[in-house]
Structure formats: C-alpha cells, structure tokens
Image (cartoon, rainbow, N blue to C red; front, side):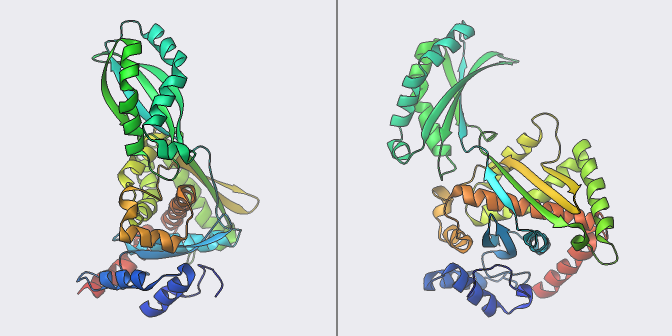
Length: 382
C-alpha cells in the first residue's frame, strides 16, 4: 500500500475499513487495535467524522513531503472536516512547508532586593559559564544527548513592588517540553545567583512565552480551487482577505481568528498527551507581543492564496503524559520522529483550520457546514 493520507472518500468508509488503512499506514499492532476497540466500547462513542475511538482522524496532510493521518481529540467534528478539506487543497500545490526558527525554552529566576542591579547584572554575565555548568550538571542525561543550558540573559523589570532582576536561563530541551528540566536547573543555579547578586530569590519557573521555540509553516491554494457552493474561488478569497484584515486590526476579531487556529492545534496536542494550555498561553502571548493581532499571515500572489503561521510551539514527543498508552498510539499513527516534526505538523493543522474557517465565514457562513455535522452528531447520539 502506498503511504498516503489522501484516501478518496475516507470519511464515507466503514469503521473497519478506516482502521485497516491506519493499521497498514502506521504499522499498528494488536495492542494498538485493542486500545482503539476499548474506546469504541464506551457509551458516548459515535462513529462520526473519522472517529476511530480515542480520537478523530484528519486526512490529506502532506507536510515537508511526508504524509500524515492526524489524530485529533475534540468534541467538534466540523474542525476535523475543515482541516482535512484545506489539507487536500494545499497538498495539490506541494503541501505544507515548515521549519523551526529556534527551539529553546526560557526559565526565569526572579531576584529581589538587589542593591546595585547594574553591577549585579555584569557579575552574573561574568560568571555565565560557571552558571551554565551548574545548570547542566543538574541534568546530565539531557546534556549528554546534546541538549542543556545554552545561554544566560539578565533583565531589569520594575513592578509596583519595586525593582526585579530577572535571570533568563536558555535551555535546549530537545524532544521534551522541558518544564521539569528547566525548573530543576533554575533551582540548581539559585545559590550562585543569590551569592553573586546579594539578592533573595522568589520565582524559579519556566516561561510559557516560548519566543525562542518558534515554528513557521506556509501553504498555498490555487484561488479557483477554494470555491464553495455558488461562491467562486475569487469571491471566497476576497471574503478571506477582508476577514483577515479585520483580525490584524481588531482584538475582538483577532481573538476568535486565533481561536480558530487553536481548535485544531489543541486537538492534536491533547491527542498526543501534550500540555495544550501551555501552548495556548505561548501562542496568545506571542500574538500580543506588540499589539494583539492575527497569528497567521494571508496574501494573494500569482493566482494563489498563500498562508503562513508563525508561533511558539513548546511541544514534546517524550516525557510526561506523552508516555501514556493513548498518546503513544497517537504518535505512532502520526509516525513522527521527534518533537520538531510534531510541532510542524501541529502548526500545519492550525493554518489549515484557520483557512477552513475563513473560507466558510467569507462565503456561505460558518453555520451551514457546522450545523449539518452537528445535526448528524445529535442524531447518532439519540
């Protein structure tokens, strides 16, 4: 069987046929199939929109030349349908293209009552190599694997309670999200930091504003191919661009615009056992770093609608809840090799859902397709 997620009429296939395709695609074993069966035996299981058990499956995703069936854990089947539809249109033009611009996490050590912050900052940076050494000794495994503490930054922050000296520990956490790694390192360097500065410590914790772990994904669709019903491709694209222009300018629209991206991204992070709340916090913080705005960029060029999403993506393929049976099954279905690959796929889903929502909003309206699937959901649930 060819390894493709572009299976014609996948949504209309029987549950057994869908699972057979996934079994061959992702080399599922008896234990995997038993887990799928276990979830199908739950009272609230409904075979709707590619629901195979613990998650629904989005199809058609081609990312950096590789095919993916994407597990999504959520209650709203229309999100899966929208992602699959846009992925189908994007794959015609070569699929999504993605990369990590950087892949490091930031840990914050808050220092208070520092008498001379300028001098303390200079002294901390003078001892940077020693501080990094102490941090890496607290987690030799990740250091030996090629990760670990990489750099040190020091900021002054004035609050209503006075001046703070904030030490930023920059850590490459490899395929882990990194909270435990970073927090342990921060606690390890606290004694030397307080000795150097003469201050007292307060917070020692990772920051979810992961602006040094950025993923960027692009995709394009031929304008004529995005037509919906009686609306031509050009009419749909004009609606998309008008809606996007508002999201760039108006926080009331931008919030919902970005939530549309998160619908898909949260569903994949939840399926894979990742901390979707941390990713949400990072994405919305990044959107608000200057003025809260759209996390996607859309434009028309050369007869194509081109989309781009650039966001923090603190995601993991090992550690924590990603080691649960359900999460390992989701990762197996995805066939991802590491956290970077997973993050690029997740961002691709976010861009797909954004384009899917806007194409409906800018033409026939969001309710027609949404309510059709919702009615099927209610009917099956009776």
